[in-house]
Image (cartoon, rainbow, N blue to C red; front, side, top):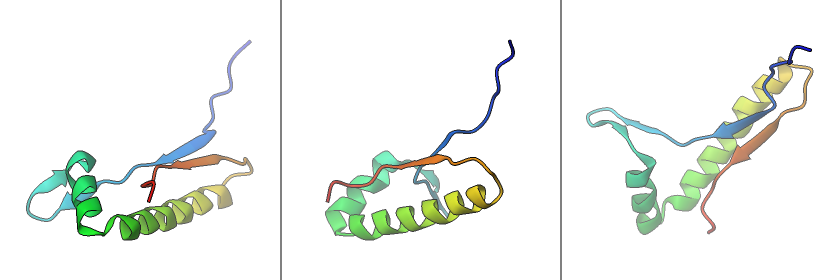
Length: 74
C-alpha cells in the first residue's frame, strides 16, 4: 500500500534578516530581546504572524492542521 504524504502541522520559526548584517540567528536576538524588555512584543508579533499565515493555509485546504509556536515563558 502507498503512503499518503500531506502536511499535518506547521511550526513557526522567528528569523531576523537585518538590512546590513544579513541573517541573524535567534541564538543572538532572543537574549537581546529578553534583556531589553522586548521579548513580550516579539512573542506577540510571532503569534499574530503565525496565526495569520496558518489561517491562510487553512482557507486553502479542507484539512485541519496543527500549529506550533515557541514563545518566551514570560
